Image 1: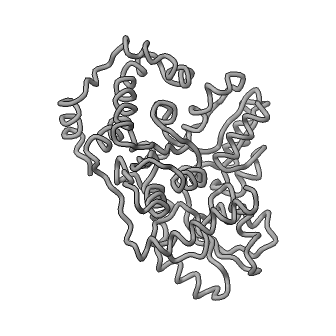
Image 2: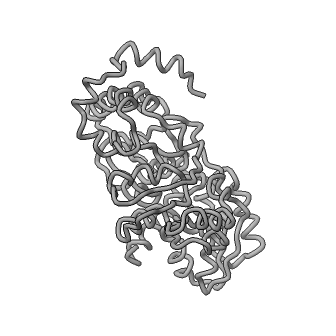
Image 3: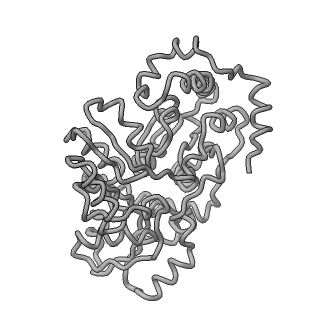
Length: 349
């Protein structure tokens, strides 16, 4: 566990991180990307960190990959590339910088290391995990294979390197349906998200069997929540992530991955929208779409929120938090992740 007192002591010896209205004003162009959701006083707090991180990135030859669930000051302030897990996985295999800082959760950092083994991958907080990743082990994959010996295993990227290594191919929420449909077997094993699997099964001609894992954010939503919200806020577009239970997805106006949701809102531009997913999604696209009124509810991922500007700066300053994956595991996991990327490109998704 990071000792935040120690972190702050180390940083304060090197950087001037005091809140600064003057610096905030100097960095007003950066602030303009998030001023609908970040207050001027908060920006005065964040600006010194953003300046220090962006300067240190150049010194370290580093790039920051920011997931769509990061808070706005990370998403807009310091991330060089942003996206969902598929987009970031592809980017990790392409970047030229020597250091990758993963502004996301641990399995994403492992994926970056798997795809770029020669690079240094930094995880700002090693305790930024994932309920899905923790719900299954390689033994669970073996258990599913024993039940369905001829079925390929399609594993969500929200898993550990060991689980990826035990699988045939990975998927994300943006390509799960297409990858399942592309499998030659009539029966396909999906792990570990039971709701993503059920939502895929509802659209696929395959017999999809699944592991009973779920996301602690998306499983909180209920179909009654959506019905109640329609009654309270008529005319609001309800847009759900496929990690939500199937009855929630059925109640929504649209369902898609994080990138799919962003594209949908950009294209449709509803007057009001409620994103049935992690709350930072709406915050991160609010300034791009001033014509859209984003309304609650809001469920936060406690793991994603462990990543802060302070921890990113400390990781870059000390080069602590380096992620390693055993080569024998990485080789097998790389095969399943690369199979996903290659098939996604072949299918044009």
